[in-house]
Amino acid sequence: MRLFRSQAGLKAINVTDLFREVMFARSRVYQMGPPTPLEIHPMLGDWRMLLKREDLSEIHSYKWRGAYNFISARLAEAKENGLVAASAGNHAQGVAKAAARLGVQAHLFMPKSAQRLKIDSVARLGGEMAHINQVGDSYDEAAAAALQFAQDTDSLYVPPYDDFLVMAGQGVLADEMMTSPERPEVVFVQIGGGGLAAGVASVVKSYDQSVRVIGVEAEGQASMTAAFQAGHPLPLETVDIFCDGTAVKTAGYLTYPLLSSLLDDLVTVSTNEVVAAIEELWRVARVLPEPSGALGLAGARKLSGELAGLKVGVILSGANLDFRRLSHLARDIGSSPGRQAYFQVTLLERPGAMLAFLGAIKPIGLNISHLMVGQFDADLAYPIIGFEGEPERFVNLKETMAKCGYEFKDVSSRPDLPFRVAPFQPRLFRLPFAAIINFPERPGALTEFLERIAGVANISYFNYVHTGEALGRALAVFSFDSDRDREIFLEDLRANGPAFTDLARDTMEALGLGPTFLAAS
Image (cartoon, rainbow, N blue to C red; front, side):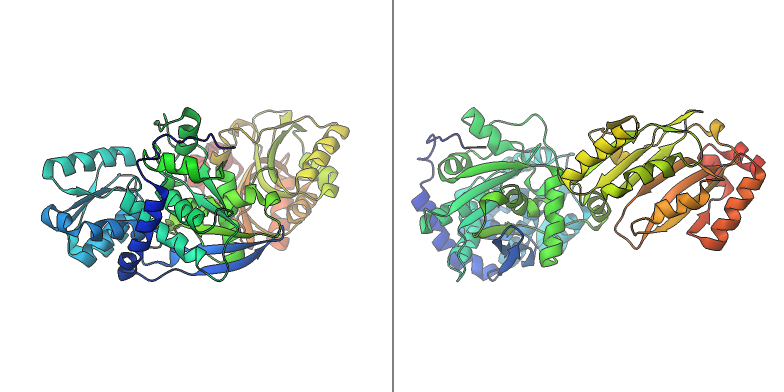
């Protein structure tokens, strides 16, 4: 979006004063930790990424800077009554580390939904100085409890973003960028409440007004975009938490006027664009950020057409990624806009129908990433097939399917797709054989298998997703018109592969195939 300019509230914090405070903050921040590297990576599109590696700090996030600057500047108050903070994870880690370093008791309120990785890290960093309270299902509920506790105990509340000292501490990382031998010509900075962005923008513009600063928000949590549109901060009705590190319901009342004055642009990015940025950071720099840590690159990718020949500052703001999320992220890799689509195709329910369809579309050169088949009609099949490839190939795919007489519809936006639902009617399965099939992940492997079985077997159920491994696994059920066809299929499968695991009877019963399966075994 192009910005809605506003001067309202700029008197609350003067940019010159904030920049001056960043200079003071350097001496405090570097008592806690050293500067982080600024790496240079050539990117496709003829631009260079200057990657600020905040993930290499002890808490694997930039949040320690603002927390330590705030607490050390107000140390007498902190020691008198202790500290209170609310956080989904990274801010709490910064406060915990600062509290341990400065010998201050800290009560840290985190939502019950906070990642175990971050909770454990807070406990480790804070030691006996950190007291963790898990309250509510969201950051806002935890923050409300923290504020009430601070009021009741007269403790010093450490704001996560909407504070002069916190913004100044975060701004030190931009000072490191702007004083490096390779100074960026444009900087993309992620926005949650706006503390990082305000600190970064004030420093960048103080050094060089010509350097563009572009804020990046995730769709579903774009509280700063909402503030710009309304002319003041206002709460979002709901907040998407995929990028949990920037999931803020209301933009800061101090950060909003600063950013409305300092930002050159503000863009929003989708979950798919964030996932694609995570994958690119792994591919280019071999780093694995948490989703909010990749927001900057997601914004740069979105505007890459404007970046040719430029040095582009991107902040990898955090890498506190729960290991259990990796499988979900890997599932979505490659699903950036235009590169992945799902189609439901109508086929005759008979052996060889799927093979004929795949043969018709093979020349297009698309990769099959998903295949979901469930027999629930005696005469027709309605498989859902996920394709990956260049956007122009999808035009060719639609033209080819129409030319060959196939009925189809684009179901890419169906909300049930991530759950991989393939409805089926077990009563339609004939002499079924069920197994987990391990296909080699190479072009043509599935088609070759279907060519071998076309004359004897029909696919009654098939659920496959590309995982990026050497082997792709599919849960499959095959039906047969005769015991002889079934035996021919099994003899060929055992002799020629692919490798498979025959599912046990209790699994068949769980799938609703018990009586039918037992009768055929």
